[in-house]
Image (cartoon, rainbow, N blue to C red; front, side):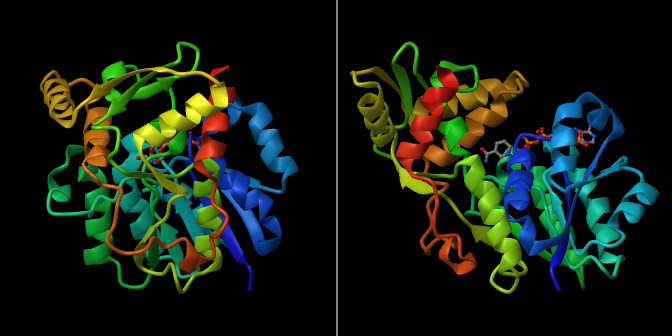
Length: 310
Ligand SMILES: NC(=O)c1ccc[n+]([C@@H]2O[C@H](COP(=O)([O-])OP(=O)(O)OC[C@H]3O[C@@H](n4cnc5c(N)ncnc54)[C@H](OP(=O)(O)O)[C@@H]3O)[C@@H](O)[C@H]2O)c1
């Protein structure tokens, strides 16, 4: 029996890529739906029309309203959550309700990022705390419902993009031909393009045994800041200005940002985790295990980034 998939957060940054890949593979699914706030539906008429034209059902409701969620769960067997950072904890109720809805078989919590159980330091990283609570709830309270954590590492579009507003945190400015590299420039990092995140989700759904009750480590490619720079220089046809934010300085900037309670503190922590090797594993990635065999390359990602900044 083909799966029936409902996606929460489908109009958000990564949600749009998830739903795009699901639509591309719609022949594999019996039903596709999004659950979104009515205010969101009203404010994005063109996108909503595109979804409807693509055969996606639109279900409106509030993630914090139990009746809305239970009604939405009727007739689906897979829930994908791509809710944003300020809604992460609300997933505990979404999971509790899914557990008591027999037709819901699998829940994909909103992960799509750094492995929050990577190593001994991971439980103390501030940006991980809410997602760790969600994993803790699943570990301790869920008996029947299956889960999959899609661990993608940083989105390539963000890591090799212009940066998040503080040039010291790293970035590649195509117009100015300037790069700020985190670390020595030779530290490896595994990245995933957002279209690949969507494709990996589809692969995980279509390989239910390989993806059952575990964190799936998926990515597009592993590279270094120097290799990214070399690719930019090749594709733009000239040398760039380069500077470095070494790990010690990144740690200092991170501490300052947290002490001042600045929202960008999360960005600094994640950059520090990635620079320390937090996207590299001592086991092979799970791309092949779920049949995700045609990821984007660094050259693809840089070409896209140049287009976005032009
Ligand atoms: N790997 C990376 O580099 C990276 C980067 C950024 C984010 N992430 C991760 O990706 C996941 C999704 O993040 P995102 O940035 O894509 O999310 P987002 O665009 O900020 O938001 C996604 C959805 O969350 C829902 N939402 C937001 N605020 C809400 C509220 N107050 N009440 C109810 N719903 C609300 C919205 O649903 P409606 O459609 O109903 O409006 C929205 O579409 C997160 O787990 C995040 O940590 C990873």
